[in-house]
Length: 220
Ligand code: AP5
Image (cartoon, rainbow, N blue to C red; front, side):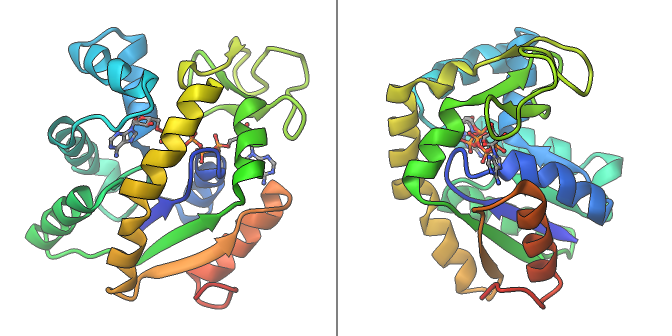
């Protein structure tokens, strides 16, 4: 399956993507994680991306699309992928359509995670991620690690993302409403959108998402 995951910052895209990708045996491709890996390796791409991310803005399309294309062309993504955080505006969605069309492929679904803004703010405020792998995500109360500040998965140090400050989160939400939400209508026009509420326990949300992707859930 080729799936796009969409939802506001802190909706639980990364959390759900880890389970969904495992259940569906497809790679989880997160442009945010790819940028953060570049930042920790201090690459030129990482240095460029950090300045945009810390301000809550989108990294320019040119570099983002090239990075996403490169990752999607790797051998593990031949039979499908779960995109998390890409596309993030209509030009990126158009570029993805072009990429897939060139390979005679198409998307199977766009999973839209709905979460009220006050819950998103609580989720982001308590989020802690692992220095070794930003796909290892915890929450100080909702998904607390067994030992404070230590990743359950690999023992790495947990920290708060630089772009999770209150001011940057406000900007990221604004960018989501103005630039990313329009892709939901773009994909609705293609009949691809399934919307679920991402409130509730992580495992219950995964169950709803799997049911919606199979076409027997509460999606549209
Ligand atoms: P990115 O890393 O994609 O961030 P985001 O979209 O803002 O999403 P988040 O990672 O903040 O949240 P999430 O939905 O994954 O939630 P999570 O699972 O962690 O992008 C960061 C930046 O990179 C962007 O601002 C931009 O600058 C740049 N960028 C990335 N892609 C780009 C693109 N395509 N174009 C241009 N720029 C791009 O969950 C949040 C918290 O809630 C966690 O603590 C978790 O434990 C907890 N939680 C999850 N589910 C539940 C639940 N059901 N109940 C209770 N708590 C829960």
